[in-house]
Every structure is written in C-alpha cells, then in structure tokens.
Length: 150
Image (cartoon, rainbow, N blue to C red):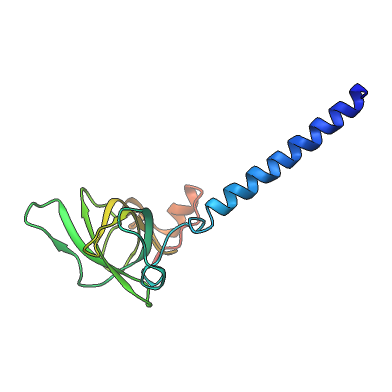
C-alpha cells in the first residue's frame, strides 16, 4: 500500500475512534447532563443515597432553622412540584435568605435529607450590591454601570 493510502486509512480509523469515544461518553453521562436536580426531579426519579448531585430551587419561607452548634442549618428547598429537606454545616453565603434561589452541592442520605457540602446563593435580576444601594442612577452611570435600582 502506498503511504498516501496508509495515511487515509489511519485518519479514518482515528475518526471512527473519536466518534465511538464521544458516543460512549454521552451514554455514560445521559442522566448527569442536567446542571442540577430540582426537588420535583428527585421526587419523580429518585436519587441513590450517596450519589453526588446538585440540588436547585427556592429556599422555603419560614424553613431555615439553626442547630444548637451554631454552624449547622436545616432548611427546605422547593420548586412547586416537590420539597427536599437540606442540612448544611458551614458559613452560608451573604445572599442566602428565605425565599431566594439556591444551588446546593452534596448527597442524599438514607433518611431523605440532602446533606450539602457547598451552597451557592442566587439573586434576582434586581440585585444591587450593598455598597451601591445608596447611590443615585447618575453615580452608577459615572462608574460605567447599568444597574437597575429597586
């Protein structure tokens, strides 16, 4: 076989290998492709205890409870289709409040609690940093910002 044909065969084999690897990876990640699970997804599909996932939803109003140790909190995440109790030990983000959005990274335990290792608080489109709350719109424009003040 000529060198030109050998290169063509090698390129074809490499392309087939790349496509096969991509298909295998996509098949392996088919259930993990979503960025996070909602409480409704967990109620519908269920999650194995110990499986690392992200849980996203809204912190239910009136559900945040501090434990006696002072660093552990329990709260409920909801999405309108289901609720999941969450336990987190650590310092919560400044934006973490009842009624706000949250993404918690962690695992479900056998008792049905989501044990969070990390909390990511989300804010709405009207968020203004504390430092900018007292600024006028003219001050914001001077800084080059387009922040909408509530």
